[in-house]
Structures are given as structure tokens and as C-alpha cells.
Length: 510
Image (cartoon, rainbow, N blue to C red):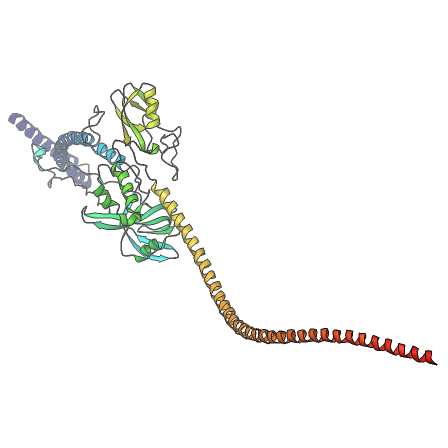
């Protein structure tokens, strides 16, 4: 190797001498500028050879490092894929992975929708309120680690490139498109608002008062304006105007499920649902708590048909359709149709619309369905199970809100009627007072008239007695006069007869 180097050096010296000789001979016919430029070109060529050799050596080192890092990147990508998706042949995905855990979380919050916490109430005007949203700042993108370059390009590369710290270059991510609002709430969205309070046992804030159903009327990147869809009750309006506690907004009204209250005893349920908040008497409240405690337990004999379910064990393979014919993702659409088939896309099975049961599988079904399976010799009954009736909170809250509004309107009408009756009663009382005074005066007149009547009656009685006496006297006088008249007539007739006799006698004597 050393002999070759000496040969190369000798050849190089000979070439330099030959170049010098040629250049000198050309000076006889060339101008000085041409000779100078040729000399500089000849001097630059060896320098280029040196730098070209160094570049090739550097590139070879970097290519070796690139191949090593490329293998590390592929290995790390495989590890990331394993952490995200799990093993490819692991169909059940029993091992932990990002997608598996995310799917479990998605299943758990499937019906909850999005939730916005820590909303600060602001100004209330014209029945609308403005909330300042609590938006977490996105984490800054990781800086791109620069590729270290040798300070001197001519410096030799290390024998092992991995021996020198060489961080893997991180590409800068593309900036995401700027959203319309930092909270992703859009206009005309319906949200359900709750006041939130700190829960000492859980260590975080939980909803503690239902404020109502609101319609989003305006949005900015940091604020949301809401207007109630129904008239708020006085209690809700008072809490809205209070502005002391933060709000919690739900995209979907919280739903009632069996799993939420599973395993809770009467004491725990009493803490969750205090009797004072229900307005029920002791017996009705005990019956309400018992519906939650008995849920999932063996059904008593007097269980209503709507709450009677049956736990069955399948004895044969059975396939059951669980999805409706067409998906329906309308906001006001109920999750299941009249036959119990799933309608929203989030509840529908992606692989197939048929659920399969194998022999030995246990299921809790409505009594009608269980009787149908038992009659088909597909399953056998294990026991009767009590299932409480689930509450559709969104519909129930709207019904309560409308009913409260009707009661408020009816109360206003009743109060108006009461005011009218009070005014009428006052006028009637005034009329009664006038009539009472009139009656008093009439009573006085009646007393006077009665006195006068009694006096007149007494005087009349006296006059009647005197009249009776006078009549008796007149009657006696009349009888006496009649007797005297009769006696006078008799006496007159006698005297007349006596006179006639004397006249006849006198006449006869002549």
C-alpha cells in the first residue's frame, strides 16, 4: 500500500513538472492572461479532489447512519402500531391498546355526547345569557431536532456513527385548520345546561341543578350566547341571574341506564335522591327508592307486567336482528323503534345487523320475548327479574317544563280571577254595608210601623169593643123600638078601630 502511495506521489510530481513545462512552452504563443488562468485551474483541481473525497466519505457515513435510523424508525413504528391497534391476529383484542381503550371509552360515553365544563356565566339580557367558555390551550408542536453536522467538513467521520448522539429528525406537523370556534359549538345547537358544584368526595365538579334547555344563538371563539327554548321557572331564572357558579353544558341530555345505579342500597340511593327534593310522602318515597334497589333482583309475585323481565339460558344457536332497516340520526329521534331495533348509527352494529347467541349464553329479556323463545325451544327460563322503567329525561324535563308553564299560566289566571273576585267581594261588601244600613233604617221604620200598628190595633180593638157595645145597644134599641113600634101599631090600630067605632056610632045616632 505504501509503494502505491509513493508511485502516486511520483506520478503526481511528474505531472506537475510536465504541466509546468507545457505551460512554459505555451508562453511563447499565449498571452499572460491565458497562462495565469490555466495555472489557477490546475491548482484548483487537486483542491476539488480533496473536497470530493471528503464529501464521498461524509455521505457514506451519513448513509450508514440513515440505514440504521431507518431501521429504528420502522421498529418504533411497529411498536407504535402495536400499542395503537394491538396484535393483528388478536381478534378479541384482549390486550391493552390505544384503539381498544378508546373504543371502551367510546362505548361508555356513547349516549352522553360532548360536555363543556367550567362555563362562566356573564351578562343576561333579553332572556339570553352569554357564557365564557373554558378552552384548554393546545400543546405546542414538538420542535424539530436539527441534524448535527460536523463543524469541519474535512474532519473524518467517527467509525461508528451511532457512537455520536444523533437525534432522529422530527418533521414539523402541518398546522390544523383554524376552527370557527375554539369550543366547536355552532349556532342553532340545542344544549342542556346545569349548574356545577364541587364534590368533596370525588374531588371534581358535578352538576347539581338543572337550568334548562337552551338554543345557541351566537358563538365566538371564546363565548357562546344561549336563549331558553322554553320559559324558565322562577327557580331556574333565579339561578341563571345569580351568576355565582359555573355552568356545565351537555350536547345530549343525560340518559337513564340500569348500570348507573346498579348495586346501590337504599341508604346510597337516599343520598343521591333526598326525600326533600322529591316532594313525596314517606310511603311513596320508599316505593321510589325500592324500584332502584330491586332493579336486577328476583322479581316478587306482585311485579307489574311492565317491570317483569326473565333471565334465560339459550339451549340452541339463536340469531336476532338488532338494527332497524335504515339508520336515522335525526336529533329528536328516539334510540329504538317500537320493536326495539336500534336506529341511530352510533348504536347500530357495524359488521352485521344480527346478534348471535350460542348455547349456554345468558340474557335478560322482556317476558313476551322470553316466552316466545321458550315456546320455540331455543331457551329455558332461569328466574324472573325485576326491571325498573327507564326515564327519558329529555322528554320528561320538557314535559315538566311545559306542565310547569301551564301551571304558571293557570296560576296567573287563577290569581287574576282571585283579584277579580276580591274586587267583586269588596264591592259586594260595600253593597252589603249599604243594604245593612238600609235594613237598619227599614228595621227602625218597621219598629215604628209595628208600634203604630200595635197602637192602631189596640185603639182599633178599643173602638171595635165600643163599636160592639154600640151595636149591641143599637140592636137592643132596635129590638126595643121594634117592640115599641109593634106596640104603637097595635095601640094605633086599637085607637083607629076605637075611633072608627065611635065614628060609626056617631054617624048611626044622627
